[in-house]
Image (cartoon, rainbow, N blue to C red; front, side, top):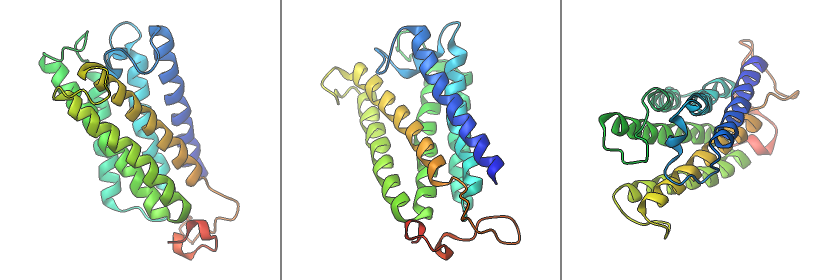
Length: 217
């Protein structure tokens, strides 16, 4: 079980490092002038691909540490990863016009990724219960509000008072940062502890069987 946690944390660290590096080499820090996807254009675009794919893969390893693992949670996380792969492989248009088919496919991938990866992680927070559930609610609200405002900006609404195009970039950046924050928090919540009791299969016992009030439903 510790192996899954170490892999998940390693991917989280790699994702964070790639996010910082892609901004540094581009000389444009969050929020970007056009969109986060613009970091994927050019010779350093692979850093963007590493960022989105590792950020979306890490929860799939951390999910293995959850005492309860509903199939729906895994489906959401896999759907989010599929969206991330689309983002990593299919580039958007330079300048943010999003007029080409590639740009439209990329946009759909980004929406799928930023919707289902956070929702899957929120489900894990909720199943954990206690303080983790409260943290999950706060973080998912931040992500989903950002995505809602992002979609409104996509239809031409100025949701941040800086123009529709800049609003899109701002809320996309907020949703991306909040998603990374959720992965980091999830790694803390699901960290294998010395007091974790294992059943005969090697998996942690269900949360409701634990003595700590922080993880009881």
